[in-house]
Length: 275
Ligand code: ADP
Image 1: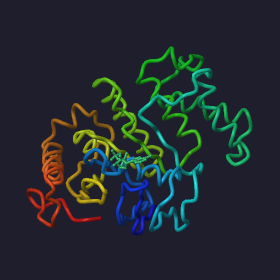
Image 2 (image 1 turned 120 degrees about the vertical axis):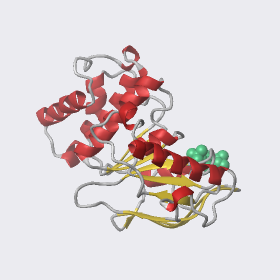
Image 3 (image 1 turned 180 degrees about the horizontal axis):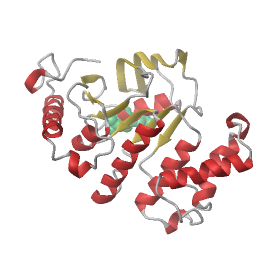
């Protein structure tokens, strides 16, 4: 479980997050997939950085399974917007790198690490590219490497910060489908910051909409979001339940953008409430 208790983060005079509280519980089957939307500067990246352990709270607490986060850990992996692979290493070497550093903890010998890396290469659709260097890959392929590198350490929590924003539309849709498929098979908890309502509705089973900075969760939308594993984004977006959810999320987002984050609920009353 990830639990945030009255978390505030300040950078000097700027308050990025203020008195934020939530609980994200794993079900016995899998972790939750939370998509986070909010106006620019409302503290979304700050929250991911705090969960990653790259930044500490100014006030309040953030805990994973009851233990305060005290720094980065193998249980939490981050996928950034910028391509983050090592340029001088091949796809396979990039995926092996983190496992080699953590080899004592992951308890796999050389052959086991190689087998896991090759398995991930296959799972993210990079078979045949394992000997290539990042500059020989497209943007989408580089993000597949980043995802495989993150998954290699089998983190229970994955943090994605606008991970597909730099990609063209068809590639972004492919990546969305891949991530939903991986989530469903591997079952981590995912916190995914995005600026796209349709991406949030497709990816998440729970959508948070943050207030303008300093950020708090204005809407925690769960009950209208349709599941999408096994359905491509193009097909999912045509469905009536998807369009309905997208309208509800858009309306909530509009309220936040207009500074209306009171208890008035978005249309049809099936979403809303503070987390
Ligand atoms: P978001 O991801 O929602 O766009 P951020 O978490 O990046 O928001 O930023 C939240 C607020 O904190 C913004 O006002 C931003 O300018 C400020 N901020 C972020 N990082 C720093 C930093 N390293 N130093 C000072 N202010 C920062």
